[in-house]
Length: 148
Image 1 (cartoon, rainbow, N blue to C red):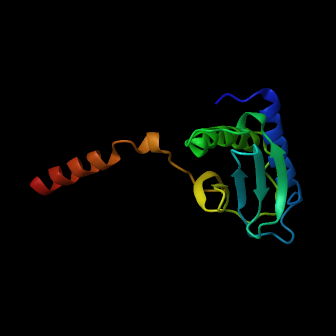
Image 2 (cartoon, helix red, strand yellow):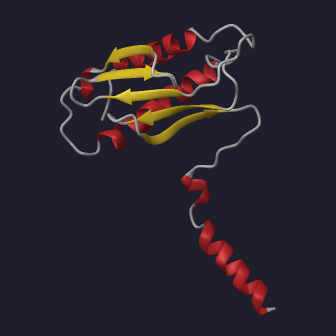
Image 3 (tube, rainbow, N blue to C red):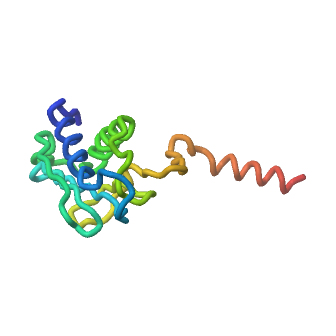
Protein backbone atom coordinates (compact mmCIF):
# COMPACT_ATOMS: atom_id res chain seq x y z
CA UNK A 1 0.00 0.00 0.00
CA UNK A 2 1.43 3.33 -1.05
CA UNK A 3 0.63 6.31 1.12
CA UNK A 4 0.53 9.91 -0.03
CA UNK A 5 2.89 12.50 1.40
CA UNK A 6 -0.12 13.95 3.20
CA UNK A 7 -0.73 10.61 4.94
CA UNK A 8 2.94 10.26 5.92
CA UNK A 9 2.79 13.80 7.31
CA UNK A 10 -0.40 12.96 9.24
CA UNK A 11 1.27 9.89 10.77
CA UNK A 12 4.38 11.85 11.74
CA UNK A 13 2.25 14.65 13.21
CA UNK A 14 0.23 12.13 15.25
CA UNK A 15 3.39 10.58 16.72
CA UNK A 16 4.86 14.01 17.45
CA UNK A 17 1.62 15.01 19.21
CA UNK A 18 1.58 11.71 21.15
CA UNK A 19 5.03 12.27 22.66
CA UNK A 20 4.71 16.04 23.09
CA UNK A 21 3.14 15.55 26.51
CA UNK A 22 6.27 13.69 27.61
CA UNK A 23 8.74 16.31 26.39
CA UNK A 24 11.00 18.01 28.83
CA UNK A 25 13.43 15.78 30.63
CA UNK A 26 13.63 13.29 33.45
CA UNK A 27 11.47 14.92 36.11
CA UNK A 28 8.50 12.70 37.00
CA UNK A 29 9.51 10.06 34.48
CA UNK A 30 6.58 8.02 33.26
CA UNK A 31 6.65 4.27 32.88
CA UNK A 32 4.65 3.51 29.77
CA UNK A 33 4.69 2.17 26.27
CA UNK A 34 3.05 3.93 23.35
CA UNK A 35 0.29 1.86 21.74
CA UNK A 36 -0.59 2.39 18.09
CA UNK A 37 -4.01 1.19 16.92
CA UNK A 38 -4.89 1.55 13.23
CA UNK A 39 -8.45 0.87 12.08
CA UNK A 40 -9.11 -0.44 8.57
CA UNK A 41 -12.80 0.51 8.59
CA UNK A 42 -12.52 4.17 9.54
CA UNK A 43 -8.91 4.79 8.50
CA UNK A 44 -8.29 6.14 11.97
CA UNK A 45 -5.02 5.83 13.84
CA UNK A 46 -5.24 6.03 17.63
CA UNK A 47 -2.16 6.48 19.79
CA UNK A 48 -2.48 5.89 23.52
CA UNK A 49 -0.45 5.01 26.61
CA UNK A 50 -0.62 2.03 28.98
CA UNK A 51 -3.49 3.67 30.87
CA UNK A 52 -5.46 3.88 27.61
CA UNK A 53 -5.30 7.68 27.65
CA UNK A 54 -5.56 8.94 24.11
CA UNK A 55 -2.41 10.80 23.08
CA UNK A 56 -3.16 11.45 19.41
CA UNK A 57 -5.53 10.62 16.59
CA UNK A 58 -5.27 10.86 12.80
CA UNK A 59 -7.20 9.77 9.72
CA UNK A 60 -5.26 8.02 6.96
CA UNK A 61 -7.31 8.13 3.75
CA UNK A 62 -5.65 5.07 2.21
CA UNK A 63 -6.74 2.94 5.18
CA UNK A 64 -10.44 3.82 4.96
CA UNK A 65 -12.46 0.70 4.12
CA UNK A 66 -9.35 -1.44 3.51
CA UNK A 67 -10.84 -4.83 2.61
CA UNK A 68 -7.96 -7.33 2.69
CA UNK A 69 -7.12 -9.54 5.69
CA UNK A 70 -3.47 -8.45 5.65
CA UNK A 71 -4.11 -4.97 7.06
CA UNK A 72 -1.67 -5.21 9.98
CA UNK A 73 0.99 -6.75 7.73
CA UNK A 74 0.57 -3.81 5.36
CA UNK A 75 0.59 -1.01 7.95
CA UNK A 76 3.44 -2.40 10.07
CA UNK A 77 6.29 -1.44 7.69
CA UNK A 78 4.72 1.98 7.07
CA UNK A 79 4.51 2.72 10.79
CA UNK A 80 8.05 1.42 11.36
CA UNK A 81 9.33 3.67 8.58
CA UNK A 82 7.69 6.77 10.06
CA UNK A 83 8.82 5.99 13.62
CA UNK A 84 12.39 5.26 12.51
CA UNK A 85 12.52 8.55 10.61
CA UNK A 86 11.28 10.42 13.68
CA UNK A 87 13.83 8.63 15.86
CA UNK A 88 16.60 9.60 13.43
CA UNK A 89 15.40 13.22 13.63
CA UNK A 90 15.76 13.09 17.42
CA UNK A 91 12.05 13.51 18.16
CA UNK A 92 12.20 10.84 20.88
CA UNK A 93 15.25 12.33 22.64
CA UNK A 94 14.80 13.97 26.04
CA UNK A 95 11.34 12.60 26.77
CA UNK A 96 10.25 11.94 30.34
CA UNK A 97 9.63 8.29 29.53
CA UNK A 98 11.70 5.73 31.38
CA UNK A 99 13.74 3.64 28.97
CA UNK A 100 13.31 1.10 27.63
CA UNK A 101 9.93 1.87 26.14
CA UNK A 102 8.29 0.75 22.94
CA UNK A 103 5.89 1.77 20.25
CA UNK A 104 3.59 -1.24 19.98
CA UNK A 105 1.11 -2.07 17.20
CA UNK A 106 -2.17 -3.30 18.69
CA UNK A 107 -5.35 -4.65 17.12
CA UNK A 108 -8.99 -3.70 17.74
CA UNK A 109 -9.03 -5.67 21.01
CA UNK A 110 -5.83 -3.89 22.11
CA UNK A 111 -3.85 -7.12 21.81
CA UNK A 112 -0.23 -6.70 20.75
CA UNK A 113 0.43 -7.47 17.09
CA UNK A 114 4.13 -6.53 17.10
CA UNK A 115 6.67 -4.12 18.47
CA UNK A 116 7.27 -1.27 16.03
CA UNK A 117 10.19 0.46 17.74
CA UNK A 118 12.10 -0.11 20.97
CA UNK A 119 13.87 2.89 22.45
CA UNK A 120 16.70 2.13 24.81
CA UNK A 121 20.14 3.57 25.39
CA UNK A 122 22.11 0.36 25.14
CA UNK A 123 19.98 -2.30 23.46
CA UNK A 124 20.47 -3.44 19.89
CA UNK A 125 17.55 -5.19 18.24
CA UNK A 126 18.30 -7.79 15.61
CA UNK A 127 15.73 -8.24 12.90
CA UNK A 128 14.71 -11.46 11.18
CA UNK A 129 16.87 -10.90 8.11
CA UNK A 130 20.03 -10.75 10.18
CA UNK A 131 19.09 -13.89 12.10
CA UNK A 132 17.93 -15.88 9.05
CA UNK A 133 19.63 -19.29 9.01
CA UNK A 134 21.10 -18.92 12.48
CA UNK A 135 19.42 -22.09 13.79
CA UNK A 136 20.90 -24.20 11.00
CA UNK A 137 24.37 -22.72 11.53
CA UNK A 138 24.21 -23.35 15.28
CA UNK A 139 22.98 -26.91 14.74
CA UNK A 140 25.82 -27.60 12.33
CA UNK A 141 28.34 -26.06 14.71
CA UNK A 142 27.07 -28.15 17.64
CA UNK A 143 27.06 -31.34 15.56
CA UNK A 144 30.62 -30.64 14.42
CA UNK A 145 31.69 -29.95 18.01
CA UNK A 146 30.11 -33.16 19.35
CA UNK A 147 31.71 -35.29 16.64
CA UNK A 148 35.23 -34.19 17.61
